[in-house]
Length: 200
Image (cartoon, rainbow, N blue to C red):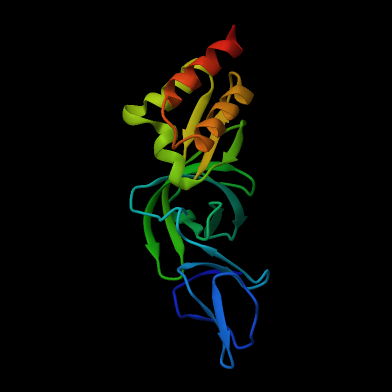
């Protein structure tokens, strides 16, 4: 089970060798704010991870139908939760959806609203910190990719992107290139050249 921990928080009564922790006779303690997986004994820094905010658009996969609520996998330390009484249609496990964040509750649960099912296609994961570069100023980068590939693309601020139709493989390659080279100059031109070469 994953949980969000803060510096100084005890992870275990035992002394365990885990990166980003310190241990003494009283146990093992986190040195950072991060996501701790108790089963795998792994502590991942939250830096660079998605920090949910109200009205964020996300893309996720329905993980479980509990009757009165749905659990949504957001590929993040947080689980999405959607109450079925507010929905006009039913969801099922495995559905890919896009939704809007209503609020982040204590314990790391993200309440979601206004889901829309994304039919077919595929999803890829990128570092959430790279999403602004993938979108581009004034949507310029993502428009260039959609125009150059004919793909329909929905971006979640949680770092999950859905692609469907057109040249999905080329769109995927372009997005991953932007993620990898986000810090470099001249990227817009390189992506344009990449799309043009593949189309010709």
